[in-house]
Length: 548
Image (tube, rainbow, N blue to C red; front, side, top):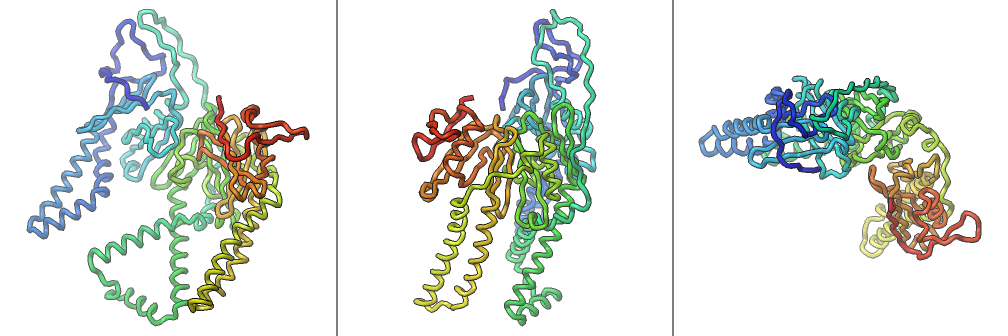
């Protein structure tokens, strides 16, 4: 982000003086403009929920002191402050920058160079859609959560769509010329935008909603709200008819039955909430490729969202399979791209290329995005028996240690014997987990991409372009050195910025890194007489940046 100096306002029909740069015919209006006046209806709806605790506190305080107008005055103040956002916000689009001025007491001017724009998100919440508005968020290539980018909250839906097309598909020419020397030049004919549909949501995919577990968030919110309301208002739930009968039932029911009933009710609530959340978030999902070199994703029922990703910023894809989703044959596809924030999760961020869907469909979409299905479907090289032994050792050792502690407590402190007896059931579960974790391990170099897979609770297979790798980390813990294994980490500017190949034999890790980025590890390697074999000069942990 840059903050240029103040610029003079210009009328749309104003002609620059001789010698000043002029637009190169992209049709951009460089004058300062305001957001749509309809945002005066939207801003109060956005600010009142945020200020509701303070308004409620002032209302209670005013009622206690005999002045009931405090709550009304605070409500009017919040509405007035919200409306000032429209009066104090202006923006303009120039051939080189997108600039926004905002703030009343703390004036700010944000500027995004147009040649640094990587993504444009168009979002319309329910209130926005009622008045025909949308919010545009312009990403400039940073993937961390501290960078908010440039946001225009309150453009008409048509203007937001036109702005997205202009910023990503029709970039201005970098060369300008003085007016005195400018000659009329015919504008080049615009190429028609060809759209290819890669994926659309099918109603049958809603069956994967209950297995996303997004309803756990709703359970936490509802539980926290009810707990706080009961404590603040000193309510006794057992005073009400249905709740009184429910409390009496749990009081007289056996503990095991009561626990089972509570867990079953929570499971049903989570499943219903997850399904509703799936429909609200992904209804109308559509992934398309444009001839201008972009991927366009639209989704949402009440809140619609449109995200555009430049393919030249795409560094790979990831096929993610959480455990419950994997048990029913589902998966989702996530983009590995620069300029997309991934800290908010794949469900809410702009990296999602396909919502939870059949695994075959996720693999097909990943292959379409990469223009090559091999990195997603080809078999991977296993990591060998030492990696398998390490999986079993780490999973079973922790359970054995826990059981030993419980037995010692039973023997010396008189703890109930059923505790360590029940804990014995964790041994086969740990063995199954270790087996599944080893089955997930694998790697390969396919079509100029580093492909690696790992994980059990969430199995991930990523295909990362080798030309997007900017460095390597080779880490070997004490136990890994004893087993002759290493963790190879490829660092990149895209996605999570580090992608690991876990517990791979050290020689294979070096060979893999050397083939993926030839010459990058040369100062750290020694060629072995055996063909295609290399060894490290100084064992331990090395971090190798990419000089390019």
